[in-house]
Amino acid sequence: MTTAESVTSLIEQFEAEANRDRPTEETPEIGIVMGSDSDLDVMSGAYDALTELGFEEVTDDENPPNARFTFETYVVSAHRTPELMYSYAKTAEARGLDVIIAGAGGKSADLPNMTASLAYPIPVVGVPVQEKSVSSVIGMPTGAPIVAVDAGKSFNAALSAAQILSREHDELRKRLVTYHGELQTDVGNVSRRLHEEGTDSFRNEQ
Image 1 (cartoon, rainbow, N blue to C red):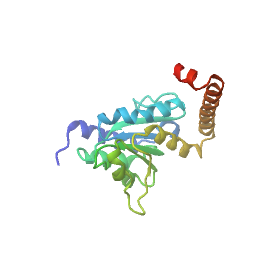
Image 2: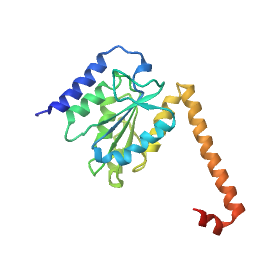
Image 3: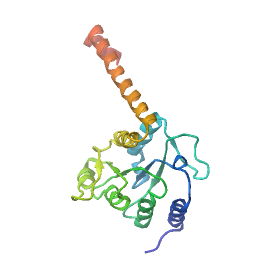
């Protein structure tokens, strides 16, 4: 199979990173991959959730951001660039990743499943980009686990990834608790406003 130079260079990059000896604080904890850049509108929810929790995105491996928790983002097609998918998943642990969020669309949304198989035992949170992708993403056999969210819910996928990490990082656990507390506060405030203003006035303000 012919492999494009742009793909080969990424594979070489993954392999080089896997062979580097770096402290875990300097490597991304979470990897986000998607089958196509057309999936980014859906998968950007994961970006939103992670940045809200204080994560920063790594865009230069030589100069990672000065943040305790970071993530990386790539397009990795299971069907068009299987070698790239294989390299990304097989080097994930050696490159310091702790969790992968993988999203794909269409009826043959194979990227999350294959990534989960190749990256094992790293946990993979699968995101069906479309409703028709759900059965493909969750259809793993016994012994080949994947965690999955509902169609389009990449924000929840990122929260799940952060929850996994929080079991070993109390700082991140505190951030998650604070985030949840803010959600509760918002619900309480809205509930009081609805009750005190009445339905008609409340609806007219929305």
